[in-house]
Structures are given as structure tokens and as C-alpha cells.
Image (cartoon, rainbow over all chains, first blue to last red; front, top):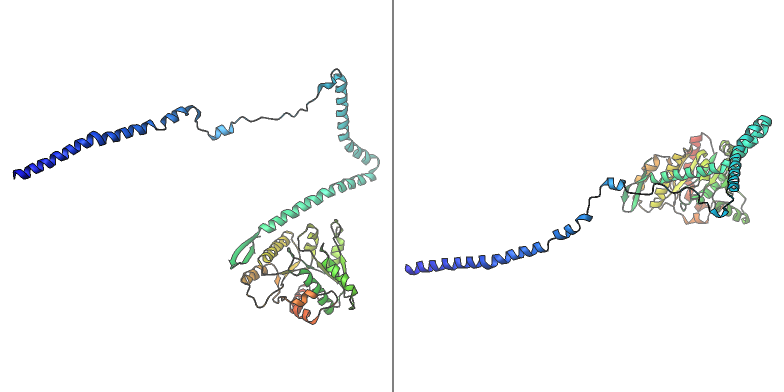
Length: 170
Length: 216
């Protein structure tokens, strides 16, 4: 009986000694491992870049600074210094002439209708002749549009071993 | 009247059928036949020119149109006169759709559309049908199976026939694939050639007669 109880006691002692050893060494190792992971965590890096990371919302994109406009003014070279007044006159004359050119056909037309009503028809026909190529072009464009529509309005409804059946969706 | 042979894709035997039809119609009809080659390749016209060496008599005149860049029938009256005429005016078009064909496609009495059951051919036939619809063409559409192999089962035939019948007359008799048709000329139809196209063309003539209430 004493032997058995001594044996049980010994087993208990060994068990507790083992537990103590485990707590002292193995547990500690785990703790140090944890500390190590903390050392290499990303928190430091994130802190380092904290200032440069920010949320970009749609408003920020909308408020992006872009050039508001481009310079439409022609650059004048100042190599004609001292002739400013003369240049201005030239410029004004050109402007006046170009404006007159724009006005002239209308005036001509009205004059024609007053003085020679018959030539007005000629004028109109010449206008028509001029616009004929543009009509032809628009007709061609329309034709291509129709052709595109005709081509896209065909639908595959069955494929029987490579023999395809189509239908028109128009 | 105006009868036009047209498709959206080449290679379906359009010109061959047009020549065969011209020869056939000139044999069975008393009416004067005028042929207009509207194809930029002018195959019909060149064939007709080549046949001038032949001993057989000329059956009809062939004119080429649309050779210059000008829109043909710009005066429009010419086209309407051709349409109202008692003579048979047969047009052979190119295998591509072009804006210059628009007036003719609109005012033809009949548009004969040869087709095959191949993938490309059936699709382009439907594109052509769509185009005629968009142009609001007044013409009767007549579909004719070309280069048909009677010993072959076309798996899409049933479906395509149903679809095509919605848009016009599908001739029951196909033009069979016949080597004799490859040697066709504009002066005569040989027995074999005639045998190949007779049933289809009889059906076509019958349909024209019924529709216009005339006798060709």
C-alpha cells in the first residue's frame, strides 16, 4: 500500500515538476516570440507614411487643378517697333475689308433682286450647285448608316452543327 | 418592268443566273428584252461582247451603266419610264451594296436574290433584306436557291426558309449545282443548262405574271 501511494506521489511530483519546467521555459519562449512579432509589425511603417496617405474622393478628382483655358490670342512679334500706328491702320483696314467681303454677297443678292430679277435665279442655282457635293456626301453618310443598321439587325438564332440560322430583328 | 438580280455578297451565281434568265426569257417571251449591266466588273457585258464572235444570233442588247461617278438615273424620269415600259428591263448588279443602286432597288418591280445555305450567304441575304426594308423598296423580293446540291442535307434550310418566306417569295425549285452552267453564254441555253434552270424560272415567270397580272 505504501509502495502504491509513494508511486502515486512520485507521479504527481513528476507531473508538477514538469508543469513548473514548462511554465518556466516553454511559456517564456512563446512570450519572447510575441515580442519579436511586435517588433516587426507594420505600425511603425504606417506611422512613417501617415502624412502622405489620404483618402481620395470623387470631389478631389472633380476639383483637380486643370488649365482653365488656352491662350487664344495670336502672338505678335514686336519687330516692327516704332510703326505701331501704321500697323494699327493696316490691321483695321484688313478687318474692314474682310467684314465687307462677308457683307458683299448679301448686298449683291439684294441689288440683283432689285435691278435684275432674272439673274437672281442664276445666283440661286449656283448656290445649289455648290451645295450638291455636300448633299451627295450626306446621302453617302446616310447610306452607310443604313448599311450599318442593316448589318447589326441580323441575329443568330440557331447553330446546327455549323449551319447557322439567322433572323432579321427589324 | 424592271427585274433586278442583286445580292449583298458576290459568288452566289448572280450573273450566271441573270444570263440564264435573259436567255430563257428571250426564248419564251415576245417582249423586247433590254439588259443593263450595273456591275462595275461588267461581267455580263464582257461576256456578251465576247459572244459577238459566236455564230448564234444576238438575243438582246446589253448596256453598261454606272461607269462614271455620276449617280445614274439622276433625272429619275428614265427609271420610271423603264418601270412603266412593257419591255423587260433586266439589271445585273454587283455583289456589293452601293449608294448608287438605291433608286433602282427602290423602284424595281422584282428583285431576284440568289442565295446559298452557307453561313456567309444566308447572313448577307438577311442584311440585304434589311437594307431593302430601310430603303422602303417597292420591289417584290424573290429568293432563289442557287448552286443547290440535291444530295446534301442543309441543316439550316428549314429555319432559313421560314425566315426568308416572311420577306418575299421563295421559289420552291432550286437551281441545282450544274457544271453546264459554268459554260453559259449570252446567245443560247444548251439542253443541259435549260434543264438546270427551267423549273425555277418557270416558277419565277409564273409569279411575275400573277403579280403584275400580265403574260410575259
